[in-house]
Length: 95
Image (cartoon, rainbow, N blue to C red):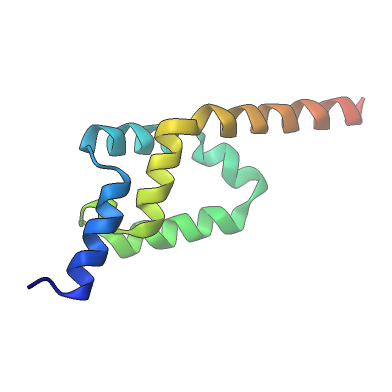
């Protein structure tokens, strides 16, 4: 009989069913993390906190990192494009 924590962990792990999706999402997040931190320090701090909490465990068992990696795997280009648009609009307003 599974405990409630075991069932919950399986649900979170199911967000990124394949480890290659998890790894791709993680790589994409690492590629844009610094630029995201430039305009949202709280998000960066929360991410660092959750990474530390997860420690050496499978990142798919931590809700924050699992969802982040799934989003990055599927939609990193949206976040990158949003950042680029914001940088372009700031540059135009300075001129």
